[in-house]
Structures are given as C-alpha cells and as structure tokens.
Image 1 (spheres, rainbow, N blue to C red):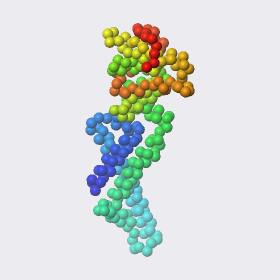
Image 2 (tube, rainbow, N blue to C red):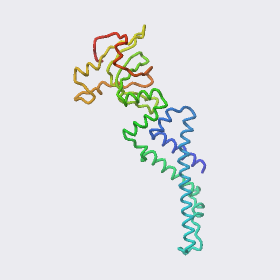
Image 3 (tube, rainbow, N blue to C red):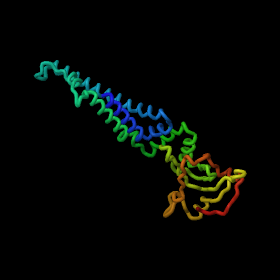
Image 4 (cartoon, rainbow, N blue to C red):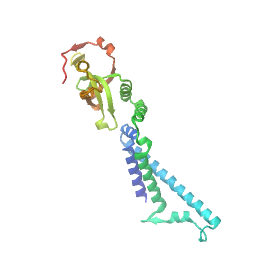
Length: 256
C-alpha cells in the first residue's frame, strides 16, 4: 500500500511539473535534489487533496447513516455505511486508499490539462513571464524588449553581434532555450580593440524593399535569427540615438 501511494505521489508530481507552464520555469531554476523535492512537493499536494476528498466522502456516509438510523428509512437495524466504507477492500488494498489515490490522479489531470492556469492565452502568458522574469536579469531585459519594442544588442561567444527586435523567447527547457531576433544590424567585435564593426544593415534593406513585420509576400520575419541562449555572451539594450557615439567600422551593405 505504501508503494502504491509513493508511486502515485511521484507520478502526479512529475506529470504536473512537466506540463504546467509556471512550474516548468521553477523546475528550470532548480538544480540537483531540489528538482526531486519540488516534484515530490506537488505530488504530496495532490495526495493531500485526495485525503481531504476521501474524508469528505466518509463524513457524507456518516451523515447519511445517521439520518437513516434516526428516521428508520431502511429495513436495516442499524446502518454503518462509513464503517463498511473503511473496511471494504479491493485487491488487498482498503477502499479509502484506492479512492484517495483516484482523487489525487483526477486533481492532477485537472490542474495539468483543464484548469485555467494550464490554458493560458497570450495575455496570461505575458503576465506570467513578467512575474517570473523578476528573478532573472536576462529575462527582465528580454521581457522589456518584447513588451516595449526596444532594440537589443546581442553579443555571441563567437564575437558576432546582432542588433534587432526580440520577437519571442523560449526559456522553459535549458537545452533548447533560445530567442528569436529580427535583425536591424549585424557585425562583429574586432579582435584587437573590441570595436563594433557593422557588416550588414538590415534596416536599410527593409526600407528599400518595403519590408515590414506584416508585409507580403515577404516580411521581416523571413530574416529572423534563432539564437541559442547558451551561445550569448552578453545582452543589452541598444539606443539608436547614441549609436553615432560608438566607433564603428563601416562595410558595404549585404545580406547573408
């Protein structure tokens, strides 16, 4: 019986933490044993809810038995449905344990698939990202760029530079965490003096070919760059008004 309770507890915890969006972010920020304890914590919550639901059933049977015995509604001499419920067993496991585990699984499935928190719309996701981003400087900056439309300067470990708009950020899973950037400028850092050298001016290309975010047949999304988060060395806001103050080496415009 103890093994069955432990298995349901861990499975419910894993199922919920792998499907709930906010919990996936918490898992991503956890390491080592913290991950197992977090899974076990949510499993314990569902099992506890199952215990409470089973207790309510026992109280309901107790009330029904009391009413039947008081008003003699059945031919039975004395009804003890709550005791029969506690003593009934299936495959060697007592009925309350089976009911409790069934409730735990149902609560887990509901919270993972059908609850409002499991079906966030665009606005709900935005609010969630804003709340979760408070604990991470990188995520705060990414959210600010996406929310306010500010340009970001992304420096890669290869010294490659991209300046553009952050379209989306996928941060749930560490191995596939990435950002989608619509480039306006790109270049590299000079190996000797680390000056910013601009190679490609995408913004002029967009203006010369009437390309916008929603233009047809080609939009700026056709030039988007998917950058893995583990390849980024630094991330900062980019102010075009102060760009002239930077020492930049100009190259002929081209699009790769």
